[in-house]
Image 1 (tube, rainbow, N blue to C red):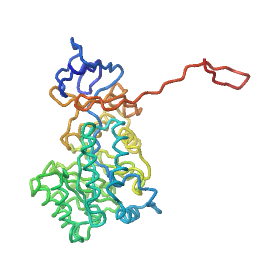
Image 2 (image 1 turned 120 degrees about the vertical axis):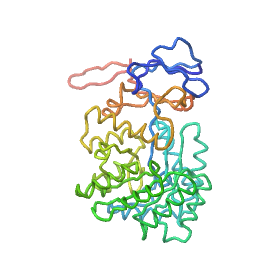
Image 3 (image 1 turned 90 degrees about the vertical axis):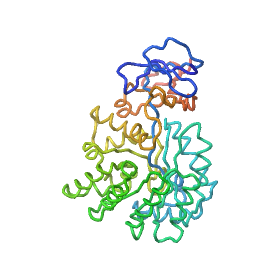
Image 4 (image 1 turned 180 degrees about the horizontal axis):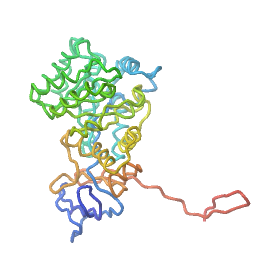
Length: 412
């Protein structure tokens, strides 16, 4: 073996396992492997999984809070100030800021990421060029998938559709848009769906991002998805509007989403900041059998003026906001950060025989403990090659001296 990781918990196995790796793939899974590896890791007290999967993030807009403030904390202000700032984006600027996020994500145990990249008359293809460079540079560390995205509308711009088309020809993996910023939301959806079918790629819409119960675009997206036979290939993010609908309006939409197998993503940090904690009804959709994920969305910008791209923290935040604490709820939250988005992005999920050796060790015995206690990530391998290692807390040895009521620390 090139690598053996010994004595780890794997969520799908009842007993601790050894993982044997050769040529970048998992070739053995057993409680005790009676062989040796060129590299061996004792996974004592750790759980092994395929890494976190970030399904919804905007790398091109990270760390721009210093150049565009959200004065009133509204979505409208965030969109306007970011739109004004985009014209000054350069390829080097986007690459530098995105690089910072990608490195942090790798250190947090993220093995795959879908990032949206805005292509429009304000920024052209400069951000796309930057993220294509990063995708190549970090291909040995993380699977970076790029979604060409119409954030500020589509139909009102003469070159809007051609820019998306060009981005897909230049290597974007998926396409998406934001119907609520377009003067013709339905045509926005039609054009993007047709483009997706032309390139046989998946679609991601950001929808219904408000707290008004009227005017949902989701029934039309459901209709288009079913008409085009695109079930299982459409994702929607935000959808906070659903949580303020009356049950008789909400239930038909969720049932339609389920028929169309539309994945629903919530962004807890952004929804807490911009919407006062109103989030899409993931729990209800999950109980109906729908696929759900959680994402970071933004890092230190007008949409989310804080963040550390730690998906486990995002899961813990979601649990607090939804007042969830049972083990089965914690396990579902962990799945929304790992295996569910992995399936949507078609990347590795849990360690399995014959699969790619994308493995992260997390200092927890099970997913519930990891989410509940925010346990740290220790180390990880991408295709069998170690890619990062986080050193834990190390207490400095010494003795404590007491002088009356005062305590001082003295080195030995």
